[in-house]
Length: 164
Image 1 (cartoon, rainbow, N blue to C red):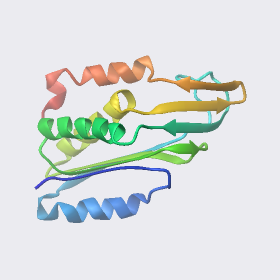
Image 2: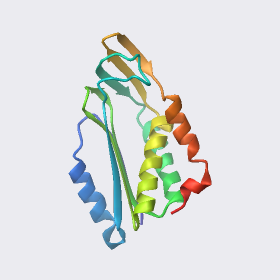
Image 3: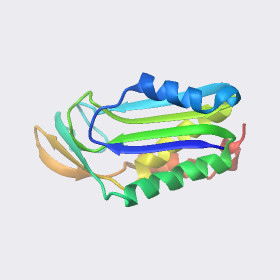
């Protein structure tokens, strides 16, 4: 049975703790675990106003946000032979260098783990339901996915990227 953990939380997360959990959850089937941790940038030249970031506030709609992430994880599970996945995404007001998101994908082989982790992260940037407000030295504004983020997500429609 595939283990899938999705958490939306305001408190920080412990990468090592989640790594140990996903490693144990898959038993002997796990041959590879790929992970990604995203941090709040102190300067956002692409999505923001180009100013020095003071805070990033993430809002979500409980239930709807988790469902949007579950749909992303389910799609990854149909594309690659995964044993387990973990997605932790923070909400609330964060400061530069705070951890904001973690994705772990476990599979028997590294190709599937790497591809699934990258796919999940690319889709989190464009498909997960969050509202992001950035406060910089130039003011505050809501930010959206960048064109580069959207292009990365669209790139997954190329079926050649979905093989292991």
